[in-house]
Amino acid sequence: MEERIVKIEQELHAIAERNVRVEADKAWETSFFRKFVLSVTTYIVALLLLYVIGATHIFLSAFVPAIGFILSVQTLPAVKRRWVVTFLKKKK
Image (cartoon, rainbow, N blue to C red):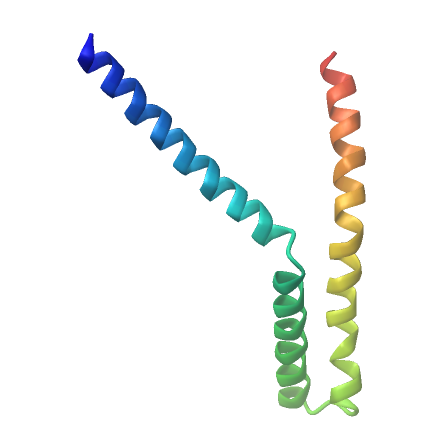
C-alpha cells in the first residue's frame, strides 16, 4: 500500500512538472517578445536577401515581409478561435 501511495505521488509530481512546462510553452507562443524577435529576424533576413540580389530601397522593402508576418500573427488567433468553434460543432 505504501508503494502505491509513493508511486501515485511521483506520478502527480510528474504531471505537475509537465503542466508547468506546457504553461511556459503556451506563454512563449503568445508572448509579445516572441513576435518581436520573429519580426526583427524576418526583417533582417529579407534585408540580407534584398541586398544579395541587388534590389533598390532595401531598408524600406524589407518591411514588407516583416509587416506581413506581424499581420498574420495578429489574425491567426481569431482564425484559430473560429476554427475551434466550427470543429467542436462538427464533433457534436
